[in-house]
Length: 162
Image: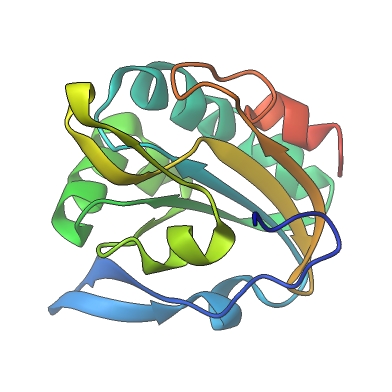
């Protein structure tokens, strides 16, 4: 069963590259207080993720901040080195977004949002989604029906929920 509006975000330890290499990030510590926009993508450097989903949050960062959302988190079932490089390539790192690796897919499974697409080489990947959190509770959630679609989960759509 998938997580839904009104549920508390499950605890997860995700990864990012820090000054000394890979480091663990407690999602509860990062996203458990205040208003947070969190979105998940099938994979860093993939088509729709790079050309539509990530840019929708980068270009709306200031609009989110104006509505009290000062933390934007992107999660993908990738390793932290890939997430760091993708953040640099897309401008997300410079914009201050937090790109976190769900390297083993445990968080994605806990959300009930995993999928496989063997023909594309995707195994245990994340469905495309976005959610608005307030103090760790899901206030709004949008999950795409197709991994190649980015409309309901785009930054603009989530911004309307804030």
